[in-house]
Structure formats: structure tokens, C-alpha cells
Length: 203
Image (cartoon, rainbow, N blue to C red; front, top):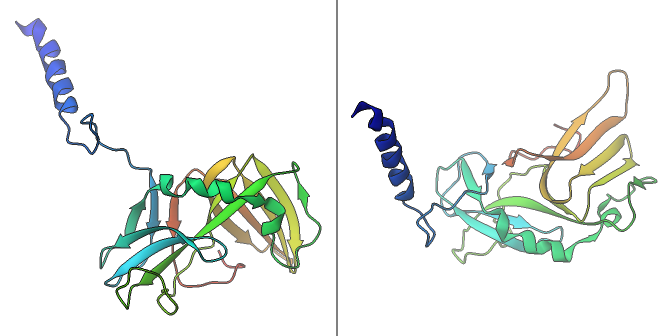
């Protein structure tokens, strides 16, 4: 009988996996997108919203009071790729001559805002945004892209992977230089950290 024990144990484990509770009709658990936003302890009636550059909300999730992070669903904003514009349209005002690795690249940049629903209408209105931000962006490009340009006292490189990604902000001031070096680059780590406002020259 001993030689049959491993087979019996394997059957029991397989049965346990197939009976796992889940959120799909097949009985299998729904997989997390792996995207997380972190922040200081949330107040009551808090929400996290993902906004376009013009301030339109494309995704919103309630945040429990006292929570310091929330998982978000990346499938909810992928349709915004249809609103992509030429990548160079997103360069900051005053940007110097830009070099881009391919013509015709389309892009979209979204940013996180955390707010408190003071009037209980479920919508972000003036005066409700909390004093939190992140320099990282939820970014889309139609193909792999690298663009280099300069702004006053700063050289910048944006290096983004095709599709949607977290564009991570990194900046430093080389020793003996007055010109900052900044990168906005696609990262495999899908974790956004919200913090008190800082200038773009701050890491």
C-alpha cells in the first residue's frame, strides 16, 4: 500500500485546487492585475481616481478609511488607448529640440488623484483632492518609444514600452553640474507611491 500514497496525495491536492473558491463561472479565482497604489492612511469617504491630462476621470475606486494601499484593475482604462495623441504633444512647454526613435508614435498619459468625497455625491469636485501626488504615470504608447529633449536646467529621456505600463520617474543632479538628468521609463513593477507634492527635480 505504501507505494500508492504519493498518487493518493497528488489526487487530494488536485481536488483541493479545483475546489478553490473563485469569482468566475469556472470556479477558478480571478487573477489580480498586480497593480497597486500606495498612500498615507486614507481618511473616511476616500476615493482614488485615474485622470487624463485634461482632468477627466477614466477609473475610480473607493478606499477604506485607514487603508494605505489598494489594488486596481488595469483592464478598466485600456480603452483609453483609442484617445492617444502624438507623443510629442505631451512634451512640456518650453521643451527644446526633440529626437524620437520613430515617427507617428501615439501616446496617452494618465495620473492618479486621491480625494475625499465631502459632499457625498461620488464625484470629484473642486476642493476635494487630497494633497498627494506621484511623478509616475500610467502610460500608453503605440510602439516602443524613446524621446530625448531638454527643458530649462534639465535633460530628459522618456523610454516607454509598447502598450500600457507604469512610467517611473527618476531624476538626479550630477556632481558639479547645474543640469538635472530625468528619466521617465517603463517599469515592470506596477506599484505607484503617492506622497506630498514635490517638484519634478525631486526623486
